[in-house]
Amino acid sequence: MSAMVPLHRHQLARLSTSGWAAVLDRPWDEEARDCLAHWASHQLPLVVTRQPADAVVDGWIALGLPAPARWDKRRLALQVPYDALHGLGEFPRLADMQALLPPPVRDAASELLVRLDACQATARVFGSYGWQAISGLDHVRTDSDLDLSVTARGATHADAAVRALESFDAGRPRLDGELIFGDGAAVAWREWREWRAGRARAVMVKRLDGVSLERDAAWCEHAGLVKVAA
Image (cartoon, rainbow, N blue to C red; front, top):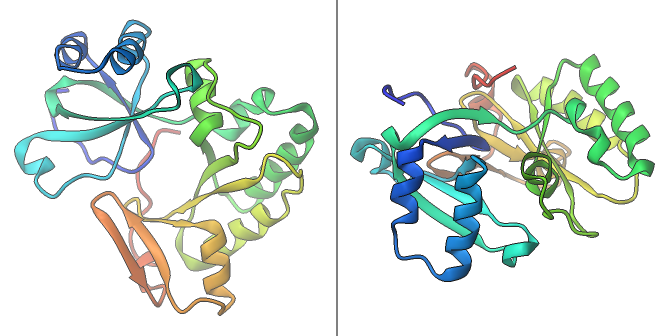
């Protein structure tokens, strides 16, 4: 990619052919190299991870690869120059991947989508289910959570989204994930619920460059939503 664009958490990044060649030229162990070679040959994406302070200045980005069971669920960390990127994308929407869920869960997921649509919140699936949808490989285990990233426009909208998430009653998989606020700031939705109910004095907010503890909702009220693909 020739021009720098803003990055955000849970964003997918695809490497160019030359970018993958440079990655594979590094001194990986045999298992890691085999996994990366599969990712390269199938043009699978990596995920944007927390960015060190000097990354943007120096023109590189930090990426991750959570490998499936075939490669022992290893978590590989990579640093690549920005010009090694071929494109950026997003995890699949929950609405587009319900068929991957266990049959008993699909009705609960459909009902959840109705409730989220009613409050105009978009849900994307990351974590094991998201990666299995993308790669077709064995990421999901019997104890895997269903991880959602749900858009939120300020505190009141986040409260409505959480009420929708609370309605999900399917046993397994357990519903987990984050509310995604303006400029990509994120809060685990269960932690948000506890904080808003007064059972926690502060809430942990995750951003691309680190985390912070916030005691009021001013930080999420005025920033515009992070721009992601529809």
